[in-house]
Length: 264
Picture 1: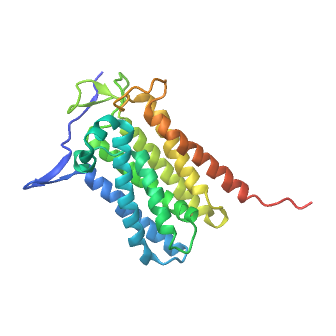
Picture 2: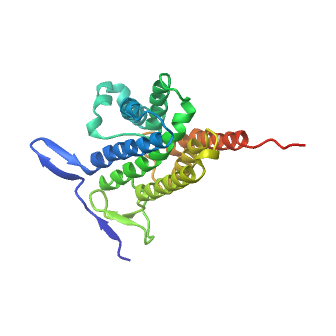
Picture 3: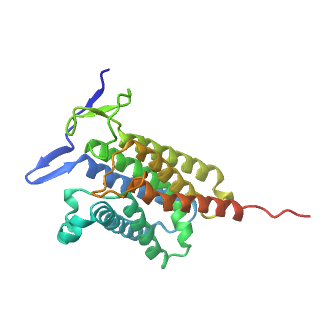
């Protein structure tokens, strides 16, 4: 069976010692498109869009710091604790989505302290562009030929020529499509039912959609941690479980809160 061969250069172009990579372009594009979506949401709800610049700064910084620390401390702690300065070398690659998510939560909490709506209200609105940004970031991983799946004879297998001569599951594309579908569901519910949804629903759907799909797709990936955790689940699945539980809790909380009392 002939499999699709992926051998695209991850670097778009270089000038001098500077290079523009597909991953970097898609990463930044996720934040910029998210900023546009948040501006639209704020206008829909008569909120001051001027504060979004400050919120975006909080989110960007906290996401990068959280994602980098998550990669270093979750996936290869022995190496980075022995070489702590290399934690700062973000340009060498290595960002963990679980750590990035925790960072975004922290950054939004800091911002919420000076905003006129609650922390949960902000997270609900942020959930919508976050799902789309996550899809773009995973597409960037595809251009980098990283976070691939295990070897497969399936027609879905792709030969990532830069790292292997065997067809592998394009796990990044599976995740990207799952996250894109989550974004479409969130956007539809927001457009159709915004006036009748209670706080927590969008956050819950985003968490459950992204991390439940991540949990399932991890079965098609090798273990990326530098150590053996000694159980059937891999580290990515273990780190996804708290977010899955949080998502389910938020959905139940929102639906319960939105339930109208029965008149006897």
